[in-house]
Length: 416
Image (cartoon, rainbow, N blue to C red; front, side, top):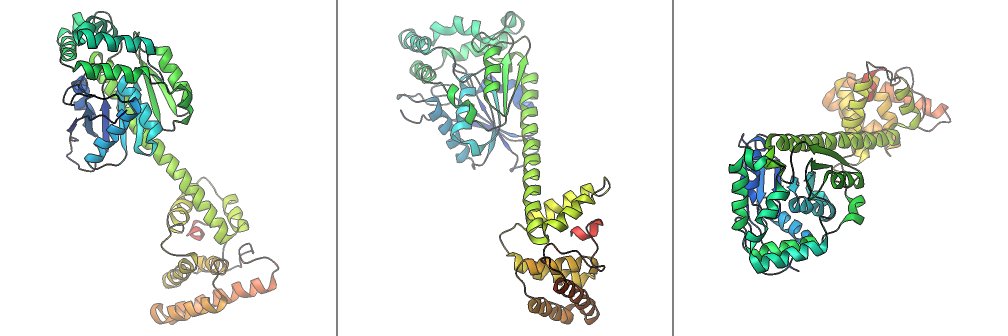
């Protein structure tokens, strides 16, 4: 087995933005990247679009050695790397869809979303693929034109749109016979049924209502096997829905890419909030945070979430400064800004983060020079009250009750 050589074409996003997200399109066996002509204009409104050809199809050179579907997936990653790399959205049909599923297994960190059209964890039967490979080697791709026409299109489509259907069948005649046969043999060896549960990419499983090659039941089975997958069926189409209903296919792919983006944002926000809450509790103490959470109202909920995610989850978790240093900076900023209501809370936090009372006093003395004696004088008063309360209390600095000069977290200003 060896990684095959494949080639691609790229359509820039309409805005011309060089940093627009990339969407990769994979074709079916016996078709070329021109299969996607009807959807490119719609997809490139929002994305850079890369279309690749299978070995011996379209612009890709003929293959002379056997390869697997997984190696085709590796070759797709190589194409993406050749134009700058990074993560990308993927949509593929039939064999192109199988390539997408292998991308999800072999390169999960690269997939932003996956649209798998008219495909499956296994496609057809191995013996049937081996028989077709032998047929094409013996009689060429012309020998499978009639059967391909029956598989590819819903009844009546060739009569309604003879130009689109005829062009696809004409391109089948131009495909390298040996490369087609090697693709058949790759499909004979392809079966990832037992691995579906490992796929974590957000996946859309799309069936064609009249598709006999990969019927709707197979696409439902695919969606059921992937925890993050959902199922859709396009009415009145067979195995190549992008030819029969290009606008519908484009809409589904765009919806999947956008929903995956929004889902990733939501997941990231949830993770950031959780990280921020952990740091808040470690720095301010469980008692303080529990009081703050208990005091949340509908009017302050968004602010509390904002502070937890951005102040504690985004800034306090950054590795560039340790917590001791951040406490020094926070105290200096609060004194300079005259935010005495916040200062008591962060004096306590500074003690939790390892600063000594002497170091806090040095910080206030330093601030007096640069921010003014009156500000530092008020800050010393707050610090004395905090120290005195700690001395008279049996609680730890992180969980002790605030003094009257340090309001609880019922007011939004305290969560800075």
